[in-house]
Length: 352
Image 1: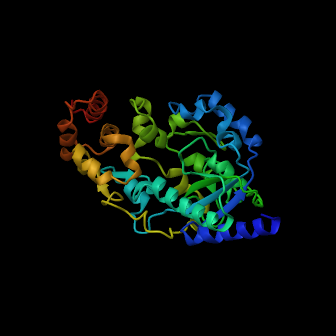
Image 2: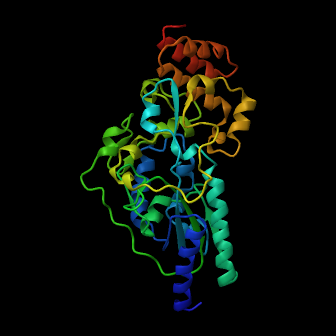
């Protein structure tokens, strides 16, 4: 294709992306050399914790053409997800008997939603350009998605390390298409955080150890989702009632006053998870968990980790008879991890 054809195709790709439910699409090259040193340093500090996959791929994360040979461009896409009818987050977090679940996980699994729509975008590209090389990613491989999105002009990396947009805040998912099409690239996004440190100041565990640097080992999202073993005891009281993920840094960010509602209904609240008690969730048996969480991002942590997280939430909840009774019901659970966290929670309530 000649330069004019490629320029027209790039414009069409962005338009098709909007038609498919994305809020913005940008294009960048594969040069992540400026991010490579910082990523290596982050791993060297062991800030990735038990997420071994952050280190085992070496520099493939910062060298897209090594991850997918032949790649010369990355198409980066942004999709809004803030559920339109979800209970106010602050209200839920202030009620210790209720469970707070990160807003991104209240609906369908974003991996499936974005991957499907990115594939449809590839199908449209192929219909116009003919056979071309590509690979779709949605938080599923060694990809520095925030760095790529910033280079593609979709926003900038905030001090909490998430992508921020002046038009849409940060309540969105990112997905990528690695391709061999030499499309024209977009102007990188510029930083607009200024002197604001709201995200750093609000973090319950002080996981944002410096602007633009997170120690994942302290992050509640890591502790409740990525960490498979016991949650360190000193951090348990700081988790509060957050049983899956944490949105505090986003809730505090002033740019999120510009957050947009999604163009798709996939992220609407399911099973009342935006406003439900810890006791009710702790009462789910494994079959109920599997049924209710099918098609949800929460499903991947599994039932045992789910109970572990809720036990911590119950340990931080008011010591009502219902809370104590729920914990007592799992006191002799077959899982060592569940028993350990239940015992900790009961001790918090002086109910051992």
